[in-house]
Image 1 (cartoon, rainbow, N blue to C red):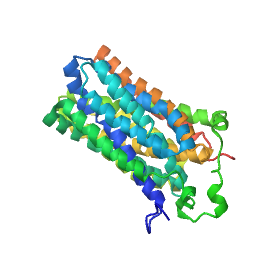
Image 2 (cartoon, rainbow, N blue to C red):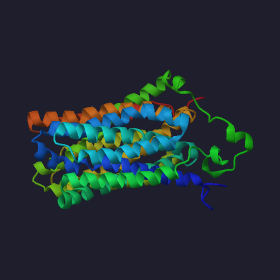
Image 3 (cartoon, rainbow, N blue to C red):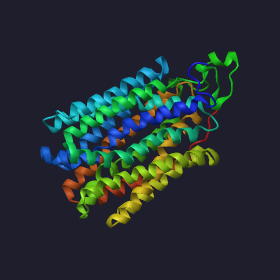
Image 4 (cartoon, rainbow, N blue to C red):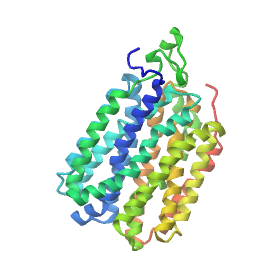
Length: 406
């Protein structure tokens, strides 16, 4: 059968493709801490202003999932993902020619924003269609690309900046994104039914290959109160989720640590995140994906509270690893739990709308944290508010059902 890898269920190839999508798109996005100080110095900008570069990109890519998800449901994930990753690479190359921070916001923000927005949701939505029993594990392995990208990109970007300058580093990252994006797109397949299979590898009866997947249409999902409770929980959690990605490195610098130590701390979030994605998704398959998601949110709040009192590199490294672990579990379990609740019929479209909640958190959290620091000289209040938001989100998830009668 064309496209089948002998002896391997092709769903795992789709997982590998999604992994590459996440590694490429989010690696480009989360390389930003390495560029924070060079951009601030180059353009004489405040922390709040530089933070807006990352926040604008994050807001855009989580908002655009509402469009790209529906598009992928209609025409398939490959053209949508390919377009998105091309935007990532070209946006970073264009940013290398910027002569103002506004131009960085436009090129980086639009390039990364559109790029990740058109690749992330279609890729992770496609993975859900290939698995049922192992959905949490498959999602975790796919989004581990985000963790490894987060772990690898900041120190690699810092090294590239030392050797090539920040402009040359943007060009190098852009070219790498184009190459990896092309490979990931070629590996992607829309569904097991398109290859005569069922989720988790069973051979599909002929009638099943043409049957639509079970689940609610997008309109029915948006009319369901459970969806909006899940939406509120994700929004509350994500106010704090992205603050460490932007502010942990400058926070470490304020404590007297070197810029390279600050960048490595962000990389350690990626180490913890990678472990969380590989391990916690499989554990949640056994204890319940809704219960696991709520626990990840609660523990993220605990980790953020610990950050507020952590002193020195070792203590901040413990925070980075712990926070990354719980963040990785959160990212792995949101799509799997959403599929459990609402089914697969409009999976990418539903995820796209749900991730607009993340967009608001991404826009508000880092930018407000930078503004409060610029105003007060302290990160204490932003970190406390972020911790409380995560705890409230976890408690809300525990009130949701684990499955709906579809």
